[in-house]
Image 1: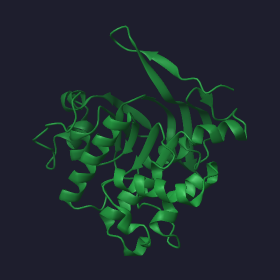
Image 2: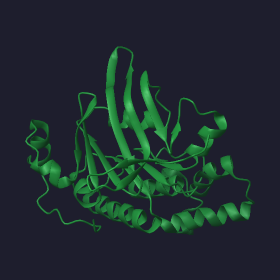
Image 3: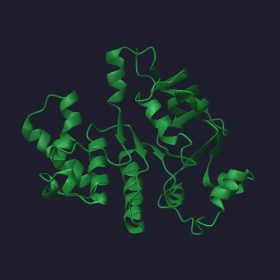
Image 4: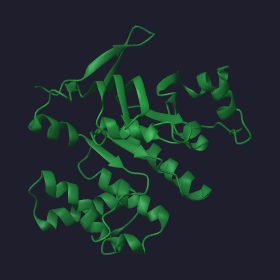
Length: 271
């Protein structure tokens, strides 16, 4: 099965390339239904912010897309491939085209920084140790770190460094789409702002598609091209920040106009 993208017409008569298509997906745990016939498309080259209340299922959808949480109904297509119909070779080909940053970094505690970054490369490519080491340093520099951290273990890293190393690992195979699960969670405001800037810069320079699960209003304002809102197991709103701010939906009003609403909406990237 060829890894062919699909397209979706936009309002101006053009077409946006859809690289992730979630259709009528149902997922949950035991008797608890988390995703209730949810539909969502991710377009190539965009930064999509996926937002919702605590426990709404934001991370569950991300994990369902990448195959860590089994779905009960519906379909998920990635790069035009139906993941249910894909054989092992097709699935691996798709998975090589995405990178993942989990909320707490999920670095292997027994491996050094360098070994963590090299881990996914060893799984897919047969490279010499010299090339692996050079790749690890290059990815670290890409996220604002240098070779001095290569031999450190995760326990020796600060929270911000852990996020950056985890992002370097997510970028190790030069993915086309990166999934970020609460990337600024646990960071101080300065560190979170720096990480937002890093994401925007990488997206622009590498042409990445970014699927960002977040509750950070600053990230939504400054980095995201489009926002999808999850409530009651479904996407209840989908559009730009301007669309969110103009909505009269009670949850959106409370979230985007509440006590912690962001007053300065100046973007980090041109739209």
